[in-house]
Image (cartoon, rainbow, N blue to C red):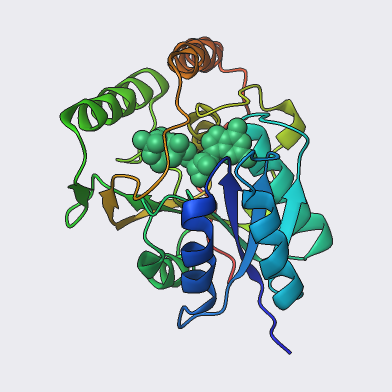
Length: 252
Ligand SMILES: Nc1nc2c(ncn2[C@@H]2O[C@H](COP(=O)(O)OP(=O)(O)OP(=O)(O)O)[C@@H](O)[C@H]2O)c(=O)[nH]1
Ligand SMILES: [Mg+2]
């Protein structure tokens, strides 16, 4: 029977053109991983495609259906809950459905998780980078990273990346229901909490590619919400209101 303790959460909204290829590649990796698709009732039928995979691979592919587009951050949380409480996952990963995050990096990320609690698929460490991206996209990412690192003191070079691995104990230590951001800035808030709790954070170089198919879901409103998230966390940092622990040694 196929079995694994590593699950990849893939939030989807209108990713029908990408989903089949992505799930096929994930199940084909040299390391066994399961997949949790969190679909927000995509009008293009992504959720039904995911259901077909779950039927074919009942121990490896799971689908969380939500009634409508509820945001990227809450989609991750729905996936985390499924992985932790129902599937007993030891490692929980997140990635985009649009091939910006290539599955070929997953074995390296899993390997580094033997030494680090959180592993980021990173554009900004030596060997990493962006390919086929518009200059607007590249600068948006650079500015967002600068802001997150400067105001929040985040040490990771790629603090806004959605390609991540969290060991189970990391997610168990964070009160997920208290995370304020529901959208893209969830990623910054999550990393802030991981660093504050002393979890060790490592980065694996990746080449980030522009989405293969489909359209972006980032709206101007998400950018404003992200600015507000950084402001809110900056105030919290100044007040010292979040628990701050010294570095935690790796347990196994
Ligand atoms: N379930 C769910 N998934 C979402 C939501 N918003 C975005 N996603 C998914 O999150 C991932 C990242 O979204 P993208 O639109 O690729 O965001 P991006 O990478 O910043 O932008 P582009 O790649 O330039 O389009 C994709 O897999 C989306 O389908 C949402 O509200 N709900
Ligand atoms: Mg994308």
